[in-house]
Amino acid sequence: MCLAIPAKVLEKDGDNAFVDFGDGTTRTVNATLVDVNIGEYVIVHAGFAIEVLDEAEAKETLRLWGELLTQYE
Image (cartoon, one colour):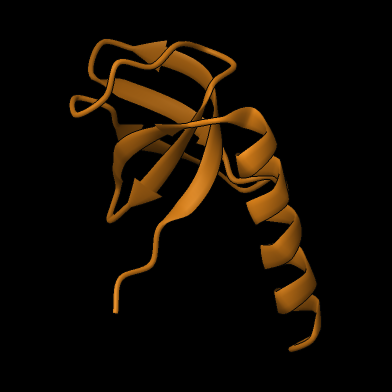
């Protein structure tokens, strides 16, 4: 099973994007597979941005992840 998580692009530097996963968790990911701009959302899998995602869909997915994760705290 694969896991991919939405993230908002905060900065972009060449092929790399600095992203926020919605809870303050930030990482640098490889963005060579997508044409993305600062402020847009991407799906991240294994350190790669693999798809640009609609903002409303990204926010709903992040909300659901947050809801799911709080059940296991």
